[in-house]
Image (tube, rainbow, N blue to C red; front, side):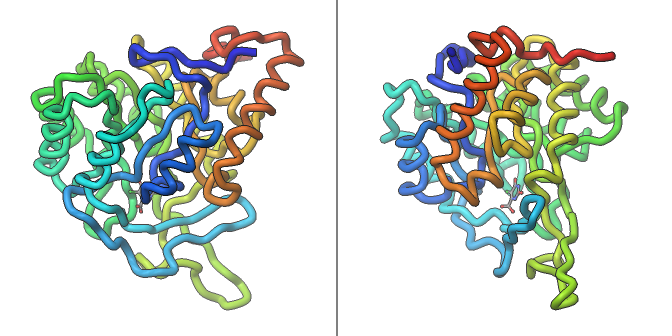
Length: 310
Ligand SMILES: O=C(O)c1[nH]c(=O)[nH]c(=O)c1Cl
């Protein structure tokens, strides 16, 4: 059973890695991911300067997944760039740097700095952080997204990707695809980020469960799987020549299989990784391999994007 993935001009040993934000803010966490069965590593979304993020409690586990309003706590771009300078690319495990500047200038400054280093690390620009008060999600502003991508192309000459928020309407899928298809070096989109601004209520305390934004936060886990699969399948259809990375609701080989069937090139794990730790990657990979064996598939190419309609 071959779980390897060839994309971005490289071959990584498997198809699973972490969702940005989870188990990837500190170097020790990143090293634990690299040492695990994860096939790649992506860093916590970086801002130009370090951030403490929102007041706690800002993350809560629920029976169906998670809610978070972290507020972009991170060590700042230089910390992750330094890690990228020392990363062992020879392992075959790709390194992605997630960038989430608080302005277009900040995103371009980080892309410019990354371009100057000429490192194999691949940028994934986050268009979808839902938890910085006063900052609407760029990915829901089509004009601003179009402007940003023009600036990214002018700043960064390599391949890059974007992390998209979930969309919920065919007109929005079409509008975003029309914009994304203008950019040949935009090699992949990662679908989806958390479903923004959910509200979890604790009926015993009769209160919300996180402090920021009066309890509003991004949802992950079982809550988001059908929405994640829809975004993967729609953008797989609408973005010829680009890769789609599936993210959302993956907690076993079953959901990883669904994402790949929907068209995902590779699959990220967030909420499940937060709760289980990096051991989740070998478990999920083993379950996926077993599923493929039972179904008679020897590689991911044998079923990627083959979701049947009725
Ligand atoms: O609050 C966060 O840090 C956060 N939380 C999310 O669920 N997605 C994001 O992209 C970010 Cl940047």
